[in-house]
Structure formats: structure tokens, C-alpha cells
Length: 374
Image (tube, rainbow, N blue to C red; front, side, top):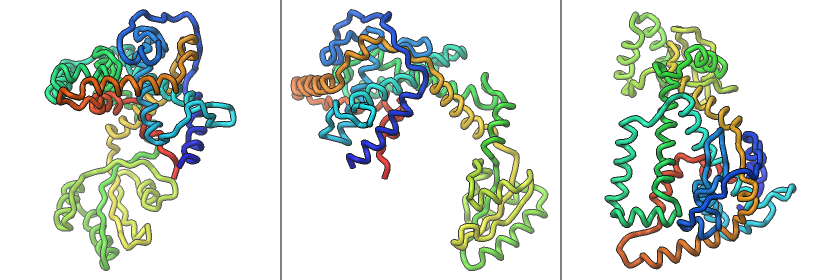
């Protein structure tokens, strides 16, 4: 397990370090605030400027939140982790990895904020209502005092926490803007991307059993004769007791026999793929007009990936280099345990897990990405 982690981290570090230009400067503000556990654990002022990403300031508070987040996950996978131990031949340590991954996490939020600002996208009334409801649900669960204690356990202000949640709504609005009818939708670009990736929309009937091949041939002939192909598809699904899911949009998969059969079709052409996988299943396929909304979502993800890769990242040299991850996390863990012990008698669970997850789910997929290879 540990060896798998070391191999994974060594490879991940290369990709992390290559994501965007990482410049270092000493001309950024160090801050003055002394509030919260993050300050007590690190000595860094929460309002200090740790990073500037695409013109967006990432405070020490926000950055240290992600350092703590990544540390907690890594420690859950390697309980005996030595933060100063090297994980690559270049001398990169676990602590270095955590700092870089925290930059990566903060980058997603900062790039989203910068992107939305550039595109003229702001939180809608619906977004504000959803944020208010999300807060109310947490308050209903913990109580107002308990909710504030949850934030204290994470070491962050409600303003910072709300800002991270708001970025997730901005990201959703950006994605919608890149879809058909959106303010940033570029049909020509989406079609070009879809063609490059081999996207196709198809109706598919799946047939199994001893008579699958014969049934496929019969249904193919019947479908070819039908004037209204979509209506005929629904009727055949009902007869076969299959769910009529409608047209599905797929990207070409190299070396996949069913994919090859689909990509060989012209628009509105039908075919029968007979036992392409050697498991007895046969497929009758109709290629139809491309669903651009699906391709647009994929195109948005590509644009987002490009923006992250090309983001400008500037770090406060003094603050960044002076942070000792091991010392910080040990102190943070001890301070959090002390605070939990002090509040243990009030009837609330102050683990901070629910509040942490609310922001962490939309981060850099740090935990999902950090899975060791099997």
C-alpha cells in the first residue's frame, strides 16, 4: 500500500508542478488578523495574501484550509506518514506534495472566480436562495452556535466558507453558459470538438438470448421501413420490455467493436451489430442528429482544463516557503482535539465533517485523484 502511494505521489507531483506558471514573489501582504485555529497552528495571518491566481487573491486562510484538507486525507491513507520523507528522487517530500496539492485545490476556485468575472457571470437570485437554504440546513442540524463552532474547528470564517460554496454555483453557471442557448455557447467550436472526439448520438436496441441474431435482423428491417424512426423505436422498446431511454450520445472508443459499428454509420443510417463482444448480445443501431448539449458539456470541461493548465499562479515566497506542513498539521490536530474536548458536553458532534465536505466536494477532486494505483 505504502509503495503504491509513493509511486502515485511521485507521478502526481510532476503533473501538479506543471499545471500553470508558478512564480514566486515577496511583494504580497502578510496580513494582520490573528483569528482562528489556522493562525494558531501556522502563525500565518488569515488575511495574508498567499497566492494570486489569474488576478484572484487567495488568502492564507483559504490556502491553509486546503493544506489541512489534503493532510487529513493523506493521513487517513498513511497513518504513519512522515511529512519530511522524500517521495521522489528529486527530494520532494510529502509536505511538498501537500503544499502543491493545496495550490491545485485553491486554483480551481480562483480560476472559476476569475473566469466568471471575465464572462460577466454573477450569482443569481436562485443561487443566493440555494446558499441560504444550505446554510439553514446546517444551522437546523447543529444550531446557530454549533454551526459557528463547526467553522471554528475548520479554522475559517463564514465569509471564506461562503465564498468557496459560491464558487461552485458560479462554476455551474459557467457550464450552463457554454451550453446551447447560453451566453458563451459557440456551436461551431462545439461541433468541431465533437467531430474531433468522435461523438455520435444513437438509438440502440439490445437483444439477448438464443434468438438474438434473428430478432436483430427482423427489427433492423422493420425499423428501416418505418417512416417515424423515433416512434418505432419506442414501440419496439415496449414490445421488448426495454426502457425507451431515447438517443444516447457517445464518444468514439478506439478498438471497441460496437463503437466502430456506430462510427461507420452515416446520419439516419441503421445497422445490426451481431455479437460484437462474443457474449451473445446483438444490437440494432440508428444514428441520429448529434445532441450538442452533451458535446457542449464535454467541450466546457476541456475549456476548463485548459484554463487551469494555463492559469497564472503567483506565491508569497516568504509565507509559502516558511510553512512547515508537519508542524502545522500536528498543531492543528491538537488544537482541534482540544476545542472538541471543551465543547463535548454541549450535545453536538463537532467533527466538522459535514461542513468540510460541503466545500471539499467541489475542490480539485483531491481525494478522488489521490487514489493509489491497483
